[in-house]
Image 1: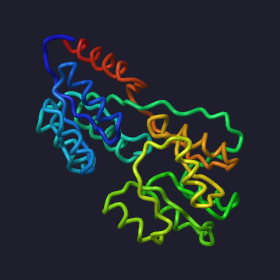
Image 2: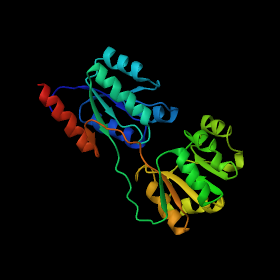
Image 3: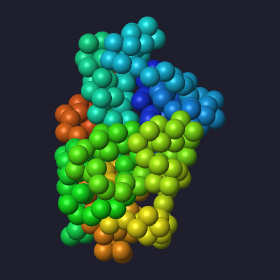
Image 4: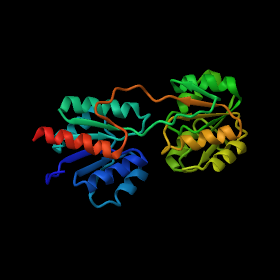
Length: 262
């Protein structure tokens, strides 16, 4: 890397996104990391060499902030299932003439034979209802309404494991009684996953392919240990320009872009 210090706007809505922000800052980039949670903001504020944006931005607002602050590069390290975030970022960069690079963690490729794949939360609900009455959701709170509103699960008992914040719990209580909400923060071992599944009398587990960082591997191993079927919601199908699967690949892509501009 040269002596220049380019400005990077990094969408860092995940644990590995925050680590990537630190990694790029250590590579002498001027990094502004964007998060939408109080938890994420507090973690990033520990780093003196990283600026933080904690305002939720649509495509137009993102384009404006990129222009006004003279960013040349955007690195999208949002969650693999944050489809709208990535699509907004791609649109904003295209309209603003900003270089876009995507970091996405690797998927898990499980060998477990009792995995049923779904393309949406609605389809996952329909599949789950056919596999068991007691459904354990490990997909967080964001799409809980979408799942619970499906007619297929009206007669099912749904247990949701969510983050233990007041805001998230209050949102989930709109759809589930307190006894069907498990508010706890991971990561979770195989043993703890199995214990929680047993505690809820789960008959089917619903998850996303969030990779090892997201704990998908230990969820599947726990389900296999208990011989429980797993409904896996596939990642959204998005064409990502300049896709990287590691921090070093992100650095290489960005460095190549900067060298081409010299």
